Length: 119
Image (cartoon, rainbow, N blue to C red; front, side):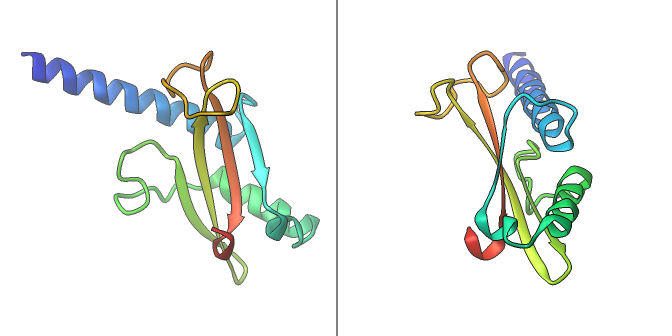
């Protein structure tokens, strides 16, 4: 019986992390920081707008890019450029990883958007 409860708790935890990640990525929540690398910024305002739209609309999560079901990574193309986005979880001081990425009181989400060659 404990195994079932553990599985349910893990699924619930993953679902909450995914919900929080999607909320930041899609702009439903401003609870986090978005970092855009110099390479992406160098593409200019139209490119940046296209990149932000692609990140917001990204839905191609699969076993290869999302093995834990947290929606914390994506790879996509804008024009001829390959880009990645990655979500990381830090403690409120931004000096260590968060102890509990399901708890916004102790977690600062950082969404980094970069050109693939900047990874």
